[in-house]
Amino acid sequence: MKVYIESYGCTFNKADGQIIAGNLQENDIDIVDSIDEADVIIVNTCYVKLPTENKVTYRIQKLQKDFPDKKIIVGGCMVEIDPEKLGNIAPSTSWIGPHQLNKSASVVEATYCGEVVRESGFSKESKVNVSKIVDDSLIHIIQICEGCLGACTFCCTRFARGPLNSYPIADIKEEARKAIENGACEIQLTAQDTAAFGRDSGEKLSDLIKEIANLDGDFRIRVGMMHPKNILDDVDEIIDAIKHPKVYNFIHLPIQSGSDKVLSDMRRGHTINQYLDIVSKFKKEIPDLTLAVDIIVGYPTETDDDFNLTVELLKKIKPSLIHLSKYQHRKGAISSNLTEVPHEVMKKRSKFLADIKSEITEEENKCLVNSHQRVFVIEKGSKGGFIAKTDSYIPVIVDNVSLGTFVDVKITEATATYLKSELL
Figure 1 (cartoon, rainbow, N blue to C red):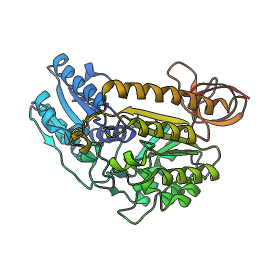
Figure 2 (cartoon, one colour; figure 1 turned 90 degrees about the vertical axis):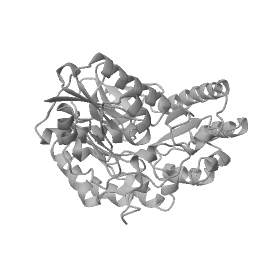
Figure 3 (cartoon, rainbow, N blue to C red; figure 1 turned 45 degrees about the vertical axis):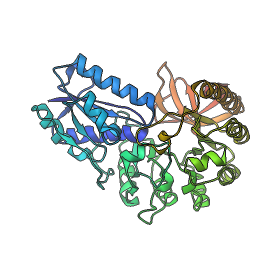
Figure 4 (tube, rainbow, N blue to C red; figure 1 turned 90 degrees about the horizontal axis):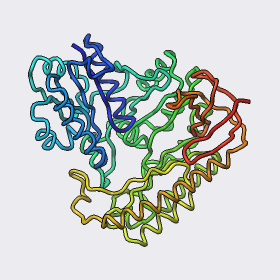
């Protein structure tokens, strides 16, 4: 029996796909790189945004049409968020919910034999120190917790991932140690909200980062998205942890809107001033910090004045990375009961922010032109050369180097998304 797996969405979901593959391999089921070779196809879905929902829905339907003789299994967030739609478009497929990955092999075996098996529902099963098949030996993803403490009105992911479930620091540290011994150069700590880590278990994110950073070896740690409200009472300790030389000077701190009114409507649980205070403390202690933010354009209660406040905020904090999303209703989300902002208004606002985004990020990157940087070579470029990362996690294109090495470069050119360099 041979299985082909394709995963969509975030880093966390990518790691879920690696766990599915590891579980299959442990049970002597072969993983293949081509659909044509496969007997069973697993589609590990994402459902966070409407375009992604449409993409995975189309993909499932197309696979059923193009490969009628192959068995198809659907995994990921769609299983928990929208089982009704999934049942309608794929009535004869098996399912593996994101909390049931340890049952992957049994679902595959039963499906291969003609049964329709659907494993869903929440579980406290750990996703640390389980078998994984990684497609990049240099980058190792560790899920430090699953679920969140939030109640964001626009989010449907929380219905798939459930309440917070943190994994023990000792277990996470052990997985990191093994990965580094096996050649991993970058440890990515991921979660729906890394700042929520340990709030159900009495441990702390800052302690976790320090424990891993103090392991032996040449590697870097990237800390995933943090919800501002869950940083508020541990800012100083998290800053101290990120200042460790083995941790990228990088934080992903979504703001979503520059308006306190909209943040309240979204039930984000923090204010703009609190957010600015967090950013100010980080930038004061880590001057070369890379700040990544998320913005939702056109939340149903966003007025022109609210939008202008978001513009002002971005110009004030000048983030190095800006992820823009147009608001769209999501299955089960509270805000889906509200009237959407007219499409043309949303489109105009999104275009305006996209232009500002390019101006800000390119301006920030141009400040690095002619600077000398020690960068970490982490992956091959899709168009040739190699991609390295500065200490601030900014991608740099570099030639004639080896993966997993540190090299000294001079930055020669900057764009809004990456830097170009030459070896020193």
